[in-house]
Length: 197
Image (cartoon, rainbow, N blue to C red; front, side, top):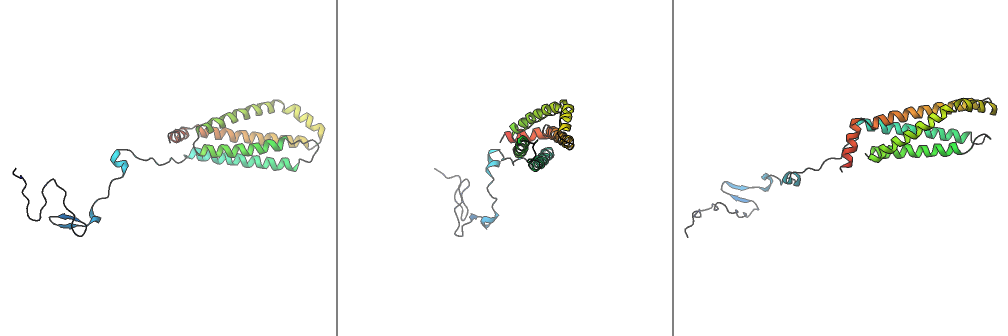
């Protein structure tokens, strides 16, 4: 058979690989080209058409909600110290200490889980807020009889009861703002993006 591409001196045949030169570069007609001038191999994402997404960062609404949760944990810690200080009095029991300790743990747990974008954490935080609403309604309903009962125990007890009620109201408002931030659109987008990973 006749070869349509007769070999020329110093030139490779078309359609065939060029042999390596002695220096480790391709043998080009115009001279040797060093390896450094060849383009790097494309990443697999460019070859197969997929990209590795970067982990989404928490939006400002989530960051603000987590910060408020830390504030709530700090308030519960102050309540815990307050309960421990007055714990030696006869009218005081250990329920306040246990409740404050549990409150600190719950605030910190929800802050960590919501920062990580766990959908169940937002739902759990909402359920806790609903329970807090029920307790606040119950407390406001029995506030007047509670103040009359506290007046019989001592002159300073009604003041302490009012301080506890105001602290509960502040915690409820803090919880309300936190839940509103967790259910904003950018927060929902963040939870959705995290659930796809």
